[in-house]
Length: 302
Image 1 (cartoon, rainbow, N blue to C red):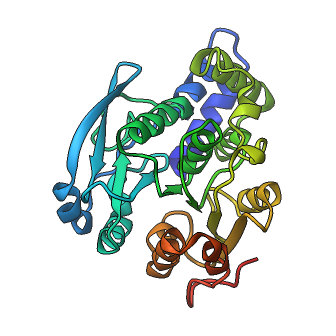
Image 2 (image 1 turned 180 degrees about the vertical axis):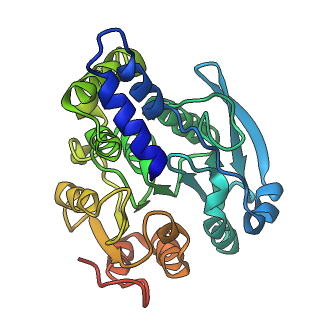
C-alpha cells in the first residue's frame, strides 16, 4: 500500500510539469505485469507432466502446454500476473474425466518471453491453439483472460461452452480500475487512454467497443457459467452482472461466492467441481447445473 501511495503521489505531482513523463510511466505500469508468478509446490507435478511447446506472437516466445490424449480439448486462459499452472485443480479434474487440457503462459507471464502483452496477443494465442488442438469442447478463463476468451469466441474461435471466473467484462474497466488504484488525475487518465489507443493497440479499430465482452453478445452462442466472489477487490461483482445482462439468463448463469476474493475463488474445490460439471454435462443440462450453489462458501445463483 505504501508503494502504491508513493507512485500515486509522484505521478500526479509530475503531471503538472510539462517536461516530466508521468503519462509514459503510468502507461508502462499499465502494460507491464512487472511480477511473474512462480510454479507453486502443489502445482509442480502436473506442470512438469505437461507436453510443452512454443508459439511466437509479435516476436515473443510463448510457452504452451497440453495434457491428455488430445481428445475433448478444454482451453485454460489465465489472468494478469498469473500463469497456466494456477489451473492445476482443473487439469487434474479434466484428465480424470477423460478430457485434454490446453493452456499457455502469455508473453511477460510464467515461462514465456517478453515483458508485456495485450488482449490481441492473447487472442492470437487462443486462435492458434484452436487451430492446433481445437475445436475446444470448453474453456475456463480467469480475470483478464475472460474478456480475451470472449473476444476470441466472438471472432470465430470454436469453444463449446465457457466458465468465466472473476472475469472482466468491460475493456474500459481495465483503465478505470488501474486509474482508481493509482489515483490518477484526469490529465493522466486521458493521457493513458491516448497511449493505449495509439501506442499499445494502434490499428485495432474502436478498442473500447471491439474488446468489450458485453457489446456483441449475439456473436457468442455457447452456454456460459460465470463465477464471481462478492468480496473481489480486483474485479468487482458488477462486471459479472454486466455479463449476465448482456447474454441473458437463457445463455448465462451467475454463481456468486463470498469470502474467497479474486484469486482463491479460482481454486476453491466447490467452484472447480461446479465448473467441471458444467463443462461435461449434456448441453441442455449445462445451464441447469449452473444454478446449483457451489457449497458452503457460495450463494445461490443470482
